[in-house]
Length: 93
Image (cartoon, rainbow, N blue to C red):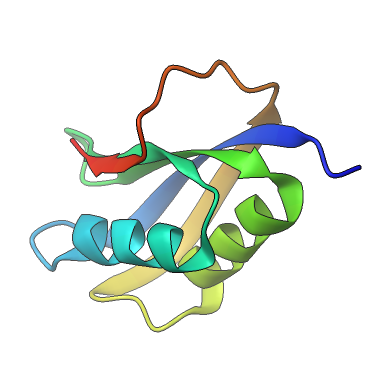
């Protein structure tokens, strides 16, 4: 059984003003079964919250780290938790 998890990732680098959140949402939808959001933070990072099957959260995290992302990713920090729910799909905030 692949139970749902929650991952919160903070992406550092040149990730604002380059379509990063749009591409993150597009990839979350492509991977499938993910709910959550991507939001720009005041310090220049992008925060990504995704809930869904762990293997799909891992796939999104792998894409954030090594994928063909817009801009430039200097690093990704993540924490894992239990899902809180309440998301209707994957959105840009």
